[in-house]
Length: 429
Image (tube, rainbow, N blue to C red; front, side, top):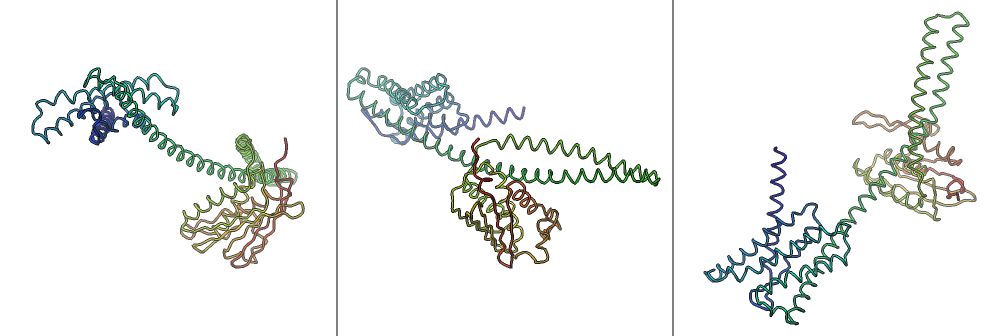
């Protein structure tokens, strides 16, 4: 009940507001042909509101606006002359102008439901405006409204007002489309990053599958050894139980991994992407991620050759992990990252550098190990998972059959990726 009352109040409020706007704009006018025949742009509010608003109660707004304009004309005359005795009728034709315009527009919107065309809309508004003006003039001056110069006059007025309405509608529609395209682009970027992260996680899960299998086999071997050597039956049963539990975990793990792999396979069956677009997407993403943690990120990109690849999700995962690693490792409020793409013999070289604190020499041999991390959130005590560089190494070496090298000193850490040209360039199907 309260919801219905609220909806009714909202609808009434919108009708009153839109009608008030029409009445207000109608006060800006000029006389044409006769002293009482006023031309204003108020009537174009009807089509503009109709095409730009999600909900436009055209008939109620038309009736209220027509009545409001009529009353406002009488009140204005009374304020100027102190009498309204003879001016109820002279302003009545204008009431019918607004009423007919709104009703014809309503009929047009009901008859045309297959989208709107600029030309069709313009012609329809011109005809609606022309017949509405013609009706008003016939009520005012009778058949004198049919003379040529009067007909040309109201036709020009109809064309001018209708053109203005169409221009306003087109501008707002273009603006709305621009916002929509921008929103779609942002969603696409987020989707690309999400898929690249999931690809990295699936690669990590695939790698862990062998460890799960190995652990299960070790438990079975332990069970058999305890059985053969007459060991403690409870220990043997525990080893068997562990092996069975791991087997169940392995089945569930493989189901999850298969589901993710199939979903990603379906999602990634799209055309390739230029590396320059991948890097532009990453630049925007890492800049936003930096802002989220109070850091200003500056990214310098240099591609010496146009490269179009159909393995963009894997490449995106590699670059994003390296960029994110530089961002997390930095202790400064400003992070400078550069990526340079070059060609050397049969290799694509990607050199990713940052100006962070560098990697300790004692840690250089461990940075690609899963779970290794020196990045700690001192506010929460959370330690990074330490999987980013391991995923990068796996993708570069096992998916791209390439190599990865790293050099580091304070203020300059550089990862160099060597990827075979034929692994990245789109293959003809």
